[in-house]
Length: 114
Image (tube, rainbow, N blue to C red):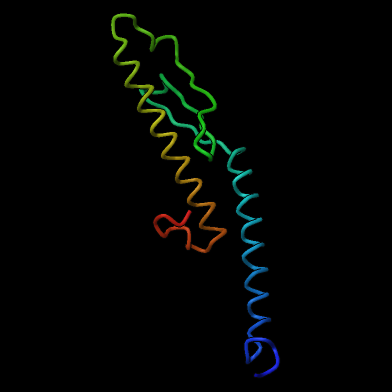
């Protein structure tokens, strides 16, 4: 058997691969922390409802303009809130995907990988 463990010196390549994987894992953990601090905003109804979410898809704030509150039309307000929340979460997804793509070089676009 040749020197180097697996013949042909593959042990060094395996060590490098392991180091790269560990660094990527550390970078991903740091990115997750950063995404928790970054925010996105979405509005609906001409700014009647504003939602602020983090890059980790946590809703931080919902702001409802007083003129959007009509006791005679609660359903409209519910729709405005729902629309703004869904848009904020969509933007958070985009932010997360964009940041993850920078880290992984596009590998993160594979379904179910991240």
